[in-house]
Amino acid sequence: MTKRSQSISVVIMSFAAWSAIFMTLIGPISGAIFGTISSRN
Image 1 (cartoon, rainbow, N blue to C red):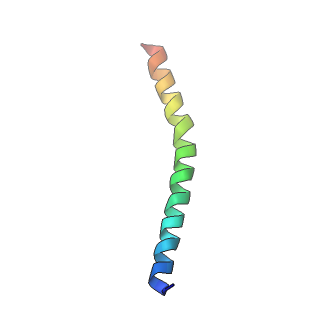
Image 2 (cartoon, rainbow, N blue to C red):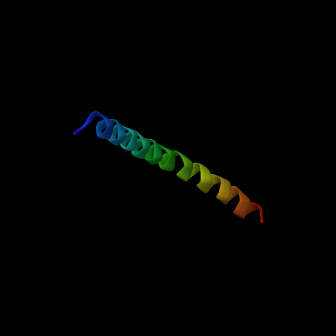
Image 3 (cartoon, rainbow, N blue to C red):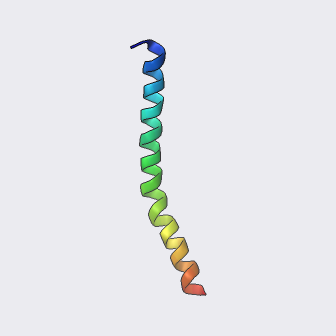
């Protein structure tokens, strides 16, 4: 494994971790927003 491919894999892993964190955070937030919008109508 070269140094470059190793750094690329690290970037991909961190990106996957951040996307997972974003999904767990944005999921309930967007659900609450859509809930308030649908309850208003």
